[in-house]
Length: 216
Image 1 (cartoon, rainbow, N blue to C red):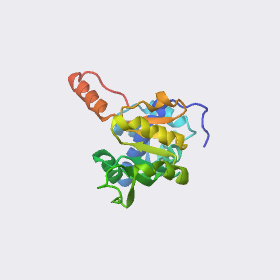
Image 2: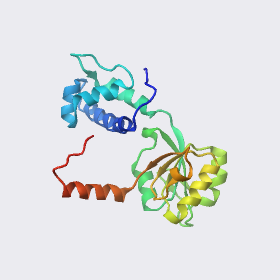
Image 3: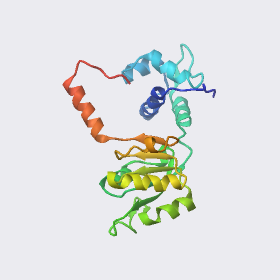
Image 4: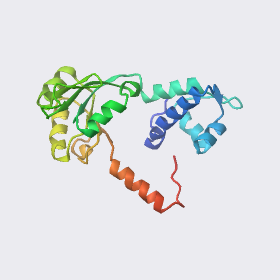
């Protein structure tokens, strides 16, 4: 599978939707699909689909289309979903518990090794068979277990200190649910910021401006 040197983030951010949608097609028993039909089902442009996948190699055949199962498998390989990168969640409050309970880390490229919190009522418990440790043990745990990624679900007042601890232990990838700007502090960190309030405000804008259609 040949890759180009540089892939735009806009293409990369579309891959999870392709992967998810191909999974739905597979579950409905669809074996093969053309880019035109796939585009119609997804509400996007067929040429964009072809261009996106062409960034990573040759997929499908003209007049024949894509094999759904193979394309989904290849998209998962491109995304790195089989890597099982070791991860931790810091913050076992409502958000941290929801993430741990309802998102399958294993199916999305990660192995959740531990959860950390400072609440005596939560320390020593389990969330979906994952233990909750005292956040005071975070540094020692990271030095011993060497997680690659950390999901930060703590209040803003604690986010900087937690990020500093994780970074000092070698963690360079963050799933950041706080408003603390990790990328500003550590330019070599890989950060995916998740701001639910921003998403809700974007939805409000789109409701207020229905004539503007957002692209994929």
